[in-house]
Amino acid sequence: MNQFFATCPRGLEAVLAQELVALGATHAKATDGGASFTGSMALCYRVNLESRVASRVLWQIDSAPYRIEEDVYQRARSLPWEDWFTPHDTIAVKVTAQRCQLKSLEFITLRIKDAACDHFRDLTGIRPSVDTKLPDVRIHAYFDAQQFTLYLDTSGETLFKRGYRQFTGEAPLRENLAAGILKLSGWEPGMPLLDPMCGSGTFVLEAALMALHIPPGINRPFGFERLKNFERSVWEQMRAEAADQVLPATPLPIYGSDIDKWAVIDANKNLENAGLSKVATVVEQDILDITAPATSGVLVMNPPYGERIGEADELAELYPKLGSVLKQRFAGWKVGILTADTRLPKLMRLKPSRKIPLFNGPIECRLYLFEMVAGSNRG
Ligand SMILES: C[S@@+](CC[C@H](N)C(=O)[O-])C[C@H]1O[C@@H](n2cnc3c(N)ncnc32)[C@H](O)[C@@H]1O
Image (cartoon, rainbow, N blue to C red; front, side):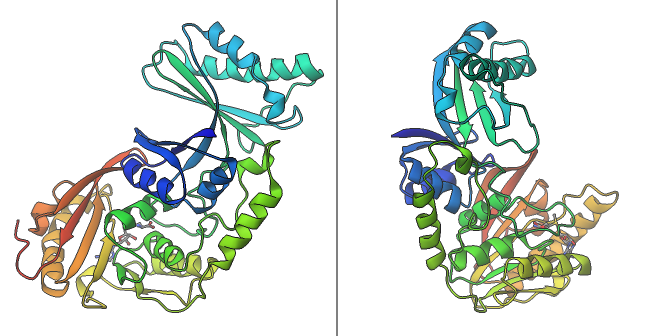
């Protein structure tokens, strides 16, 4: 049994833990910024391949108490690094911490790198080189007040880089945040979905991937492929089986629209890249002109953040009108709106059924959920 930690956008930890259990993880436990779990290396491959919410999957290789930098260096130097990779692999070390007792995280990052390199030099005469951009092996260290934990990153590039989205306009959402929001909004494959401020189409694309059972990582490489314990046959069989589950690309009730024609062009190019042009429809339209494409479904969106000069005022004018559009035309729908603008529910004159704190990168947002029942949402 191995111990893992999957990271995710803050606010999605519980959604991630549920997803991990569904993928076969044991002891999945949500904590700040992610969820810990146990399982086999094959499970680790599966989580990398199929999790829609995780950002990275870290494999724990050691955990020990520390007081000073030297404790960390000596402990890290004693680890059997040669069991995991070779001195010809390039490495990068990343440190994160909460209430860490050490003075400089930069310095301890260097000391952990030195520890692994010195270990290999003593053993083989060769020191691995550092490559901070595209290393073969990424080492993560997490420090709390008394304990530090070392991990090898089994993901490589972050998992929200699915590889299909090349065109992005204004403030695109990370794919895993969009996938988590779809789950929190109550959307499930088979239900109609509409994003009337779709930008580069992240919600639309993630929904189409889910609906067709396309694993988000089906076309990308992973960090675990670089590790010595990599079992290629297990991985290739798993990926082939997942590919067999993919449904044919047929038109589904997944819709996006945006007032900006360039955003619509980007979203359509991204759908095409992902082989999903046939599946979802994205058109140019002002949100005030939208109509419900079905009698019930889920509407999700993330409006502009109001950072451009004058934009906050424009939004304050738009929200009451948007509230009316939703009340008049979307009875029977669930609505999920991600925004950092806390004025939104009042200005829309709608009472949210839930407010979920979520971080879009460093920006603290809320996901406001509304149940549109005709005439009963007055805030
Ligand atoms: C923050 S971006 C959405 C980003 C998107 N979720 C993504 O991942 O790419 C907000 C979008 O709202 C669009 N927008 C602003 N006002 C609009 C309106 N009145 N009707 C429709 N779309 C509008 C903008 O063009 C922009 O693409």
